[in-house]
Image (cartoon, rainbow, N blue to C red; front, side, top):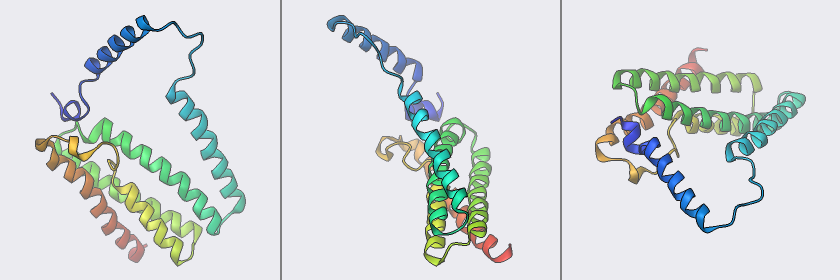
Length: 181
């Protein structure tokens, strides 16, 4: 059994339980006339236009504090979602040597993106600090993915590495990029 299955449970068993519960509930209720769209479709239908709208508005504004904040909102949301996807798909199921390499790559890539973003937008000091804080938030790919008390004890060392190594890498590379590039 993989670490992913220990944390999130067996998806096949969960799906079977959900179907059985749905069958039991549907026997007791009259059928609905019409079902709404799924949560994922609704989420995508709302988020993609929001990303596009904020990005177009920020590009229209060019550079400056408002454009920086608008781009930051989009990048924060995208970075968080990509981090969760990366964690679910790879970090909690891959062998530890690959996890170390992936965590270092994630932290350094986030540092490079934030450095490039700040160099392009040239915000004032307060927004630079906000930008580096945004990068630190995105550098932890599994932040908010699941509740820490639900993680089994034998998985905690892996979770600690996944939570802290990218952040430490982000801080080191941010410092290096600020002084070398």
